Amino acid sequence: MKNFPSNVNSPSMGKKNYLADMDYSVLQQCMHCGMCLPTCPTYEETGRERNSPRGRIALMRAVADGELKIEKAFADEMYYCLGCLACVSACPAGVDYADLFEKARAQAEEEKVLTGKKRRLVRWLTLRLLFTRPRLLRFVGRSLWLYQASKLQAAFRGLRLNKLLPKRYRELEELTPTAEARFSHQQIPLRATAYGEEKYQVGLLTGCVQDIVFASVNADTAEVLRHNHCTVITPRVQHCCGSLHGHNGEYELSKEMARKNIDAFDLSSLDSIITNAAGCGSHLKHYDRLLADDPEYADKAREWSAKCKDIHEWLDEIGLVTPQGEGGAQRVTYHEACHLCHGQGIRVPPRNILRAIPGLELVELEESMWCCGSAGIYNITQPETSRKLRDRKIGHIRKKPVDCIASANPGCNIQIQAGLQADGAGGIPVKHPVTILAEAYRK
Image (cartoon, rainbow, N blue to C red):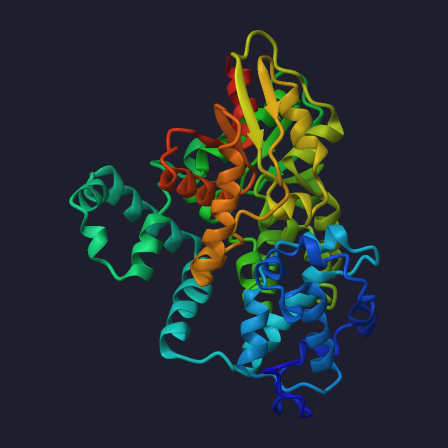
């Protein structure tokens, strides 16, 4: 392939070799059939083989075989991938692409082929500092809330001062989410007992960004669970699930986050661990794989993965308590977060929940499983491709009049809301399906 040197490469002495050390059968599993190609947003954008899952796997295998030297071009290609996992849904061979692309990015970071003081500083401030310290993250969240609640952000935008920012920073400013006044632990009791008969005791994950921007979604999740015979245990201080680290080459740090989350819950007393964020859930369910070689945590991680459930999945499994009375007529369309439909294979349960709400009409969205371009921090690292995907998604949403867009991932919700705002449709709310369900229970 062009632009990729083919001389033999051996990782520097003392460095980990994630690709070479993994089970080689995973790399061999790809049959090169091409079924993934039409599902891959980056391949559709460029038409280049190396920008497809099949092409990237060929590059990874060449690295593992010692036939390809890891240089900047390899790392850039791995980070150009959205990690949307649409290829996983399409693959007839069951290739575990999620594991592959995480290991490839980890290897690129291990070799330090992406350099620059600015990049190193940003990664240290975010991945190693901010998203490993929940209290510090809450401090930043509170500062953001004060900035917004004091109308300083409104004044900054109203005076069009944001237009004075360099284009790159102006685009980032437009994506600034709205922080909530209260965090999850301020809205949800440590132990929230079930309404009526208690049949289950579950733990609730509150997340990192979710805790700052969508704490009310966590509160809605707890309320819905209580309506469905669940007593909800919500530890006061929880860590990032580690998906942000695992997806950005900090493989060892993602293991550390996994251990801290496992320690935060008494697994033996819980029937399930509930997550309501699609991207987090896809990663949380693989703690068993992540910690398989950890003698202290391997057994705990297996129990964790067996009990970890997405909220829609759990409600579908135990049997949803249908809301009673008039919910109010509304037309809702549903965007399928990539890591819910592709990463976790959950497509029907969210629709079942929405259809069970009195007065709600579910309007199917064209290309509902196509990535919106958020993809973790992809809208920050690859703004041009991200914006094209966002505009494509908004174009489909605008084809049919709806009162609300439902989506089960914080990144997607922020991305779609920003797209609606840019398209002049900012008045259409984007809500988590569980929030819509909680509203129906309250009515």
